[in-house]
Length: 412
Image 1: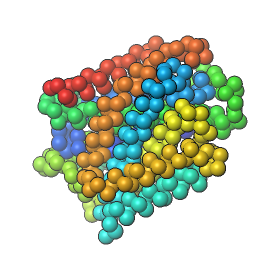
Image 2: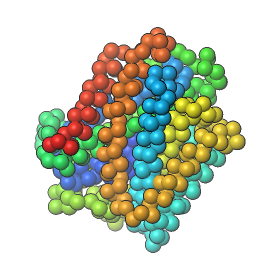
Image 3: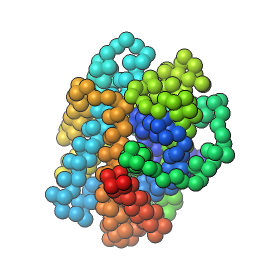
């Protein structure tokens, strides 16, 4: 048990960051607008998300390099740069939306202008990312994510028709109409997000460096025990991420949808889902949860793009390095955060922005998954330890499902 607990790290942090403000907004919209229609997606996305993140973790662990560095060995550089720029743009939009969601939530409790909150949060996160060890920050902040488990408590307080909940969970109902299909794409995109693929693989390399494996030769290869422990770590992170997702959808369905509040346009409306538990403190509880996952997700978003560029272009990299030894790496982090701040002065609706960033991720992810499958199945790149057949098939099914949902959103 001590060994299992000590193995928890990148997978848990990835799982916590997955329920970022974009995720909370998307799940809240799904529950408020469509009731229990999408409860089954939590059951589906758990094995899919876990398999994808396990594959990315295996790539980083076995090759001793991040995902972008491995893709550079398999694809033309120009194609990889196009993909990385697309990732940077998507991540920057996501950073802007997450900052907007955090500021909107904080504004509920204070009279301070939303734009001032955006700037304040961006400065705090940027300073902490540059000056402090992200591992230590994450170890503290991920405890704030426990607030998300207020949703299960609320669901039991409100009272649900549990047989009907079981039917909605175990018997999938296909979406009808463009909005419903777009919501499915958003759910898949915010749960199986491209930035987490790069982050997971790069953090495996950081873990090895932290253990003293500073050369590629020392990092290559992994024992069966190491891979099993990492799979456990990733599986636990994915499980709790999807449990939180399930109960956010269920709670908003039982509170907001049940009372006819089907359109969410502000954080205050989303916070109302927690009122049966917290009463007048619902806004406080909601804000703490949003801030916790926001402080985790934004460094992950900015960091994943920085890792991708650094690995492709041969820059010095790593959140364990100081700014002097990785200037270009940190420049990407700071520039994407600044661009995210700038987006907030375009007068966008925070909740809508969070939702549509999830849709964008849902449309981009399957293209990247194809490339990941090609790397994970290559025995030479994977040092004779390619992905298992079951894992490869599961990720392939994930890719097909995400392509199908994206196509259906435009066609049906």
